Amino acid sequence: MRCIYCNTPLGASDYCTGCGADISIQKRIGRISNLLYNEGLEKARIRDMEGAITCLKRSLKFSKENTDARNLLGLCYYETGEAVSALCEWVISKNLQAEDNLADYYLDQMQNNKNKLDTINQSIRKYNQSVLYCREDNEDMAIIQLKKVINHNPKLVKAYQLLALLYMKRQEYERARKLLKKAVQIDATNTTTLRYLQEIENATGRGTGLSSRHKRYEKDAADGKDGQVSGTLRYLSGNEMIIQPTTFRDSSTIATFINIVLGILLGGAVVWFLIVPANRQSVNDDANRQVTEANTKLASAQVQAEELQEEIDSYDEQIAEAEEDRDAALAKVESYDELLAIANLYVSGSESTAAERILELSADAFEGNALSLYESLSSAVSASLFTEYYAAGTTAYVQGDYQTAATNLEKAVEADPDREQSDHYNAMLYLGMAYYYLGDRDSADEVFNQIIEYYPSNASVVQGYISSSSSSDTSTNTLDLSGLGDAATDVTAETDAASATTDTTGTDDGITIYDDTTTGTSSEVVWTDPTTGLQYDAYGNVVG
Image (cartoon, rainbow, N blue to C red; front, side, top):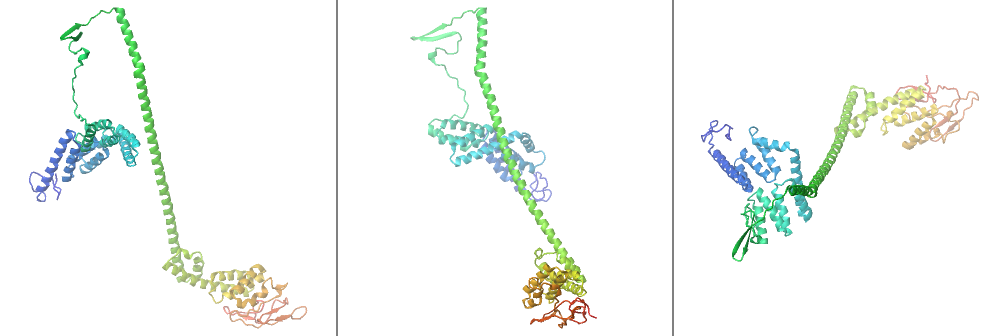
């Protein structure tokens, strides 16, 4: 015993030698626990298992570290068929005292016998199933299960009691009495068993002899034998006892031999007709029992395999979901990193690069402050990108490089999808005319139709260049580029080189269309680019 305050081993004194605390109450509690342990030991020796269990539980209430009481309690549980409770007590005892503990031996004996553990486990399951059958009023199935339980675990007192109770309900009192007598042999003073026996005695009016008594009975006088004198026959004749000796005859050698042969034949017949069929039946029963147990184990293994497979599938689904979450999180982190890198590029002045890279991102990847930053950067870089591509496109246009102009102007229009820039209309007009001069009439018509849709007030400017409404030779038309920034709106007619005549048509919307004179140049300034300051004629040629 050790001090509860400082864990110092205690001596004979009532005070701890380590901390000086008064441990008299602790010692008294230990003595009470040992007293109850001794009382439980005495009861266990006379097979009063219920009384022993009660005393040992009280002993453990006073001192839970009393490993002797706990080990004995486990043995009492094991003797009454409750192996699970016994294992629990021994495991607790092992944890409390790791060395020099009898619980090690008990646990080794249980663990080394796997078949016994499986049998106990099956008996417990069947007992629980029989209890469920009883609650469902399925008595026949309960009786069958309880018989199997008793066969597998003949020490389980509760199984005897429940089966006897079912027999008592069916008024099969003798069967119940027989089962309860077996239960008494396991636990002699179990109150439940004794109460059931008392009810059987009250119902049948006959007592139950629980002690084994060996009695010697006299033979019936009518047989004329007292069993004391061999070779005599006694009988009464009136008031006189007649004793007549039996007659003995000497048997010859042949008769003796015949008797021996007959005895052998009779013994062989007994063996053949009685013992052999019984052995065969026993072998068949054992084989059937083994097959049944094997099928039961196989079914249990299959169920366990299915359950394990379901757990594996569930874990696989969880892993897949976790991987998807991880990939989404990584993609989100990459998007945030990319957004920060674009912000750094924009701050450092690399607006073009920032604009190109931000187009690869999506607003769905951001939320909160990051979404606000994305929208701000998109708005800022789109304006910058629009201005850059617009300037490059118009410059190429006025230089007559319509392919480069179309490429840059198309990027400028794509950089301003919401048409927020003031020069968006001009960019679309330049783009349509670049397609027009490149001969890509489908693309030009598509751009002109968009201008009509988005800017209906300027529809008349491009209406004449759409294929469905233009003349048969639209290449002879030119465009009044009025409204393009600060461009001039005066247009002069070109003189035809062959006929020196001019065909002009005036319209109310300010558009003047000229026939192509094939001269290719004109010195008349038609408009001035507000971005570059260059002056151009009606055909896009630089003037001066």
